[in-house]
Image (spheres, rainbow, N blue to C red):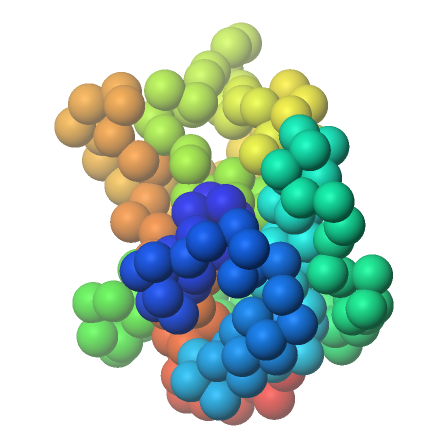
Length: 201
């Protein structure tokens, strides 16, 4: 998902890129300006995009396609995001909002898989890839079994009743568990949902 997202950003910047141009100060400055001014990326996001380009150039350096990486002149920061965990009361209020079914269809679906993530601890990338085939049951216990996208580690997560209640009806095993939007669309909808729920986080 991360690779696809970053390559799409590069295509939006330019449909035609050469390794020589990408490995130049002009590209780094122009691409950073594009990420900030055109896409509205925050510091933590545009630094990740530049880090992606640096990794590509490091591979080109190992393959001897270039003799040095332009990023030796552009140190990349790793700013820390500011995160506030939800309280149990806030999760309960969001669940009450979901059960009330007062949201329009897309925010309602976003809230569904967001709550599922709250109940299970699943990361966005794993949620995006999750399919009904990952849903298992043994000895009357439902659980998810999958390989984590970020760490490539196998994991099993038992499902509590609140999580099971959010799972939609299955049509085919390879169907996605939820209709997960892009992370940008998800974040935009979550901001709308939090405003409705009067949660300032």
